Image 1 (tube, rainbow, N blue to C red):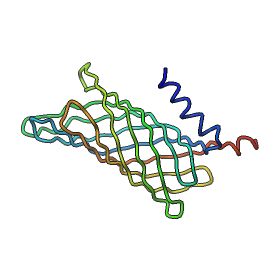
Image 2: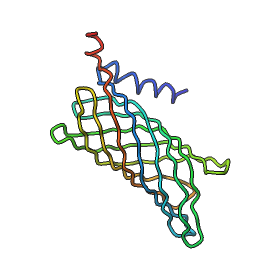
Image 3: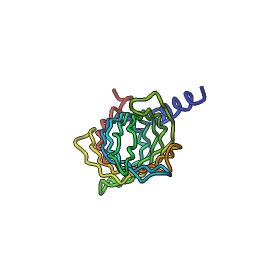
Image 4: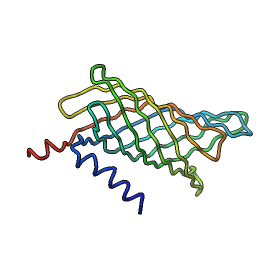
Length: 184
């Protein structure tokens, strides 16, 4: 219940304080490197989709809340070992700071991931953090496209380490802010 209240507050406070409200959808691809303590590291390709809301909290700062799904393919055999593929369902909260003059910035994100190994009923949870350089391009008054390259560290209990680099494209559509909604 506390989490639900926190989520509602996280969504309502920016809206009620006049923050710009933006809907975002994104697609990402990349590679993950994981290593079990007993075996050599394996490389796994990944791809996924996400959607969420972004709130402008200052002139060049936004807070993003998103949900996504990501599919991680099994690795190629290395020394007879294959790292099993899995599907991730995630929720994330992030902050983004950018320069409007140069259209570049940085994003930091914390994620809660619920994953299931392909072909098994095994499920597991892990948190992750990422940092990403980004480039933004305005496509009109309310439309922005953003490219990111997040470096993500997964805190998984099933492997010694799990690190990924992704390339993400997002489309942001501003649906209003308090001043614009009051004038309508």
